[in-house]
Amino acid sequence: MFVTICIGIGSAHLDRGDLPEALGWFKLAVGLVALQGKHGSLAACAFVKMGSIYNVKCAFVKAIEAFDKAIQINSNIREAYNGKINSLFKLGYVDQAIIAQGLRDKADNFKNKLYLLNYSGMMSREEVTRRHQEWGRLIRACVGPIPRPVPPDPRPDRPLVVGYISPDLRDNVVSCFLDAAVRHRNKGEFRVVLYYTGGRPEDDVSRRLRAIADGWHNVHRLTIPEVADRIRGDGVDVLVDLAGHTADSKQDAFTGSGPLAFAPFPLAVMARRPAPVQVTWLGYGNTTGLDCVDYRITDALADPAGTPQRYAEELWRLPGPFLCFTPPPECLA
Image (tube, rainbow, N blue to C red):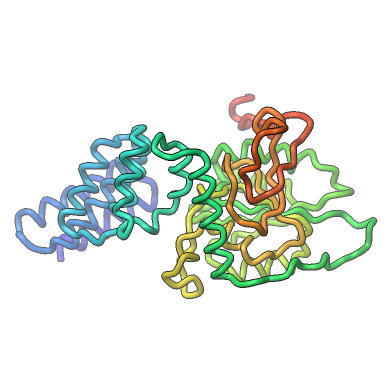
């Protein structure tokens, strides 16, 4: 009972962002388990939470130790495998992290598996591309054929509706690059709607983006079909993914336990083809692997003309840099 109470109090502190206090309660829980000689499953839970705190504090070696202890107690606890892989990656042990996935039956739900392959020394670029395309075909097969929607309003003189979908519409570097595109658009020609898929609470950056957009939807709690329906209902002409394979997956009653349950949330939405034109930009430096994503925005420096086509999307090279950084307001004070 006391172990459960300690973990509950620690989790409450963790939810509030009080990491030192949370860590203390989780350590106390582990200590009580050691004294009592029972409640091993609760100890595994506490070790996973300790590992996640160490990851946030960039104490990656301690994080790996905590995750390993959780795995020793419960070899089926997927959060421990995912956390360990993330820790190894952050330490620069990319290939070791990929080998740890050979835990593939344990970590098949690792949300950034394809992302990790971009940094591997064990795999050729062609193989990385093949893996992305293979994933794209698998997801499309799960969704089934969906026709390209027709723009709901055919008038040529109306504003074009552009939707951006991302888990990073908060204090995240992606927002620093998105800001200028939203803030300095021609408001007579473009309407912007933002779809926030992140599980973290909205913050000051979220509120700043909300203030300069024409529409804002926090869709984290919606299912994938519900988000796709919302986008269609908003009459979005161009849907832009800002995360690629860096985003969290969406696990709910709709996705079940199949491949869609481990697909990045924004890409799972795009697989349902909610907009006539779909684009990926900013957050991921490789292909999505989805043939229903029409364009990947880039430039001649990132993807020089004449280089082999390795993308499911058509490359749309901007004449200048494909991204523009806007410093946070506090940096300009």
